[in-house]
Image (cartoon, rainbow, N blue to C red; front, side, top):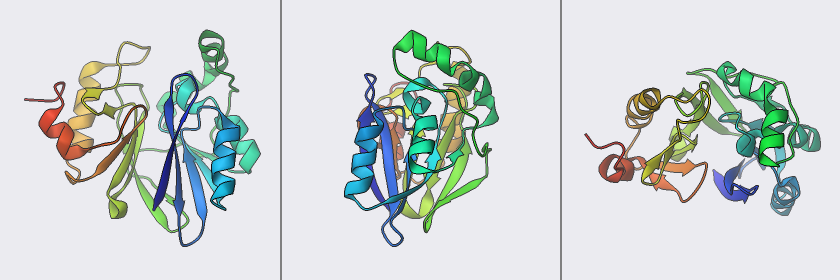
Length: 209
């Protein structure tokens, strides 16, 4: 697997361009905006974007999904149906944030235990609510990497003070879904630097004890 993390929007949200080197097929995980930047990156690498993957439906993660789907002729896969209200509120989120966005209907909702392929790559879908009601994580065990959206950060956890957030639910998601993963698993968060599962188990002040 090859990965390029491309910060987008004023929120500096980490959109991940992931691709299979053997097939040159790729996906955009959480294209919140700045599509010209994402398109240029895909073209420079000679990639065919075959899927748009969404961890959740906050605007900085999903605001560009509709246009990305149209631009690349790629289906929107995810998030979980628990995000349907946030998707319905996409235009309201746009007005509040100033980030351009269009409402969309995913081509496929995802649930815990589903798998998603990108070329020869395989992702396991983990249901990790708490930051939002339907938040998902894309874990590629063969590549030892997890794209966690806003569930877990280096030294921090996702916000739970926004509509649909719940702290105890988030902590439970991290401890039951993420912490069982291999400690060397690379964690690509929705904002900020990468970390590992082991590092967060050991050092994250929100998760000790």
